[in-house]
Structure formats: structure tokens, C-alpha cells
Image 1: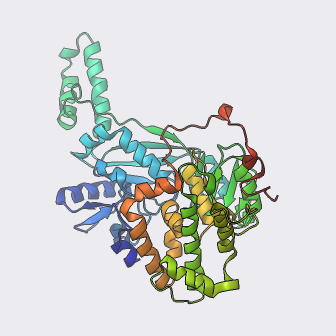
Image 2: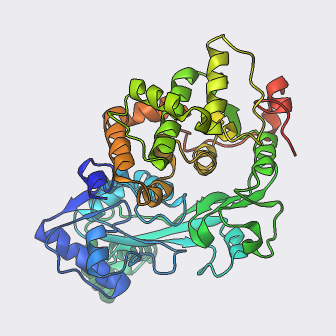
Image 3: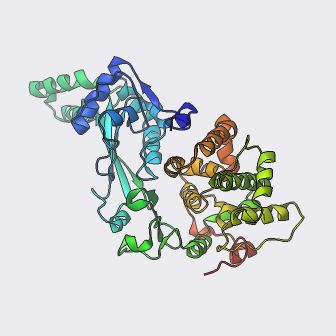
Length: 450
């Protein structure tokens, strides 16, 4: 992983903590949440305050997420909002934390100027012992306060001020006045600079979780479903149907089309479909060549074409399917009928615009795993796991490609591949469904095989 870290592709955008004051605040928060402290004099933290260095020091990568269901967090600065989330257990966690910080940024800026803020993403359940319990996690509540309890004290002081103003003889209540003065020494003048950090609740009907080998839960779609990376039998009895696994390509393709969650790359608005398909073909060639131990050379497109000629009949079906599609785009061949049974089928799709875009792209990545760029962008947990299994020559190629083609303009690359970022307040509107054209009626590449 050292190559990834050096290239800024792993642990990138973490927030450095090196000042004694911030370390002392972090230790107070860490002691409050876990009963532990760190002896490190500098480290880095993600959006939740998790530090990979402290995780290694404590030999506990889940020290802020002990049960894997209710993640705790430590905020030292509002700049954490742009940091990644490491050891992600639920795909919604980073978005929830980011929205919580952005909504309360002014208050958090003032609070973190004096103390660390600690809190928890409180799910609807306290543990996830069975897959069926995942469906009970329909919302997440976020509560936070400083370690010194400034928010709670400000609430108490506000009640005392209200009482002081309401009681006719409040100015004679020396005990009340003394308590108000004592609290005000901690909170400051809340009549001029109010301190409030209200609890926030976020809906979580659709999400991915790393529990049970990786599970996608879709409860707020036209047809609810659960999709598992492990065989569906391992899910046991579930209160939702259908329950599918990644081997059921036809069933997943049918479900995605019925829910209108995907669109063909070649018909995506504002997308250079031909360029994206060529790049996917390059990734597939690199994978095939690496498995056969062929020299990648500088892995430029001219070198990869030579590898394609060498492979001949051994070319992967994914490559041949995309080549047929590219020939159609170039006007030299007929429209290819790639059904969901074809290995290239899911490489030809991207998620449709909407609130489920990122989650659906994660799912498509698992169904088209040779597209390493899409994997890195949409499913970093899977990327890092697969990276550890690759040969050194493939690792070098992938890192150099991502440095050259993605890092220089990551936001632009994401929009070019997947479209604009969904709005925070995007909502599905079932009553505004567009008329279905022929492609929607029969599937992107012909009738879906059920």
C-alpha cells in the first residue's frame, strides 16, 4: 500500500493533528468515548476523527466504531468535512457526517475553538447480529456536544434565563443568579452568541454495508430488494423480497431496469461514450495480460493493442463485447445485442441520475470489477481489497494511471463519468415518471433474459 499512500491515493486529504493543544483535546475526547488515549505527538484524522496511526497504536482499527453499527466521531475542526471516511461500514456515514458539519458549521466553528466536539451516529439498532436487522436501520440520529458539555450547559442557562425573566421576583433569587453566573463563565453570553447543536435525524432507506461480506439494501425504490456479495442463502430469512446475490446477473439486470436505476453509457447525456469504452477495454486488457504474465511495457494504448493481438482467441468476452459496441459507435458494425448474460453487459451501464446514483454505481462496480478507475472512485473498500491481490506490475500501472488521469482533476473526472453530483435535497417523485421509450421497455441492449 506504500505506493498508494505516496501517490496520495490512500489516506489522502486527512487532517493533520500536531499541535499540543489539539492533541490534548483529542485525548480528552478519546478518553471520554473509549477510555483510551494516544501517546502520539502527531497523527492524521478522517471526517469522523478516526486516525489510522492511532488505530495501529491501539491495535484496534475500529476504536471509534466498536460494534460496527453506531459510529462515534471526534471533531477538532470543521475542515474535517472534506476528509474521507476510513474503515467505512455503511455507505451513508460520510454523507451524514458531512451534512451535519455543513448544516452546523458556524456553531461547530465556535465550539471547536474552545474544545473538541464528540458524538455518535445513532442507528435504529445497537448491534447487527443478523442480516435481517439491517432492514431496521432506516434512520440515523446524530447527537454531539463538546467534552466540557458546552451545548448542554447553554441549554440549562437558556432555561434559567427564561425563568429569571418570567418570575416577578427573579432578580431576588440569589441562588438562581449564582448558578447563571457559574454557567456563563463556561458558555459565555448566550443572549448575544447563542450556542445550539440540535440533534439531527437522517433517513437511511437505501445503503451498502460491509457487514456479512457486503450487502446492498434498497427499501425506497419501486421494487425493494437486497443484494448480497455472498450467496443469498447466507442471508437467512429476510423480511423483504427479492433477495439476490451478485451471481444472479439476469435477476439484477431485470431489477435495475424495472426500477429505472441505470442508463447505457452510449446514451448518457454529456458523456463521451466511445472514450469511456476504450478506457474500459484497456483495463480489461491489462487484467488479461497480467494473469498470463505478459509484459505490459509502458501500458500505453499502442502497447495494449499489441497485447490484444497476442491474446487472439484468449481475449476476454468483456473485451469482445465492448469492442462490438465501439464498432457500432464508429459506424462500422450493427447494433450489438448484449443481454445481461453477456460478460460485458454491466460494463456498458452507469447509474441514472438521482439520489441512488452513487449506491447504484457501487453495485455496478462489483459487477464489472476490471474497471479499476470506476472501482477506485465509487468503491474504495473493494479497490483496496483487490489491490492487495494484484501483481506488482498491475499495481504500478493502476497507480500511474490514476495519478495521471484522475488525480489532476478528480471532480471533473467524476462528473464526466457519472454526471453531476446529486443534490442534498434530491427526492424521488413517483408521480413525475417520464414516458418509457423503446430502450427502457426492452433493456439497454435488448430484452433482459429472466
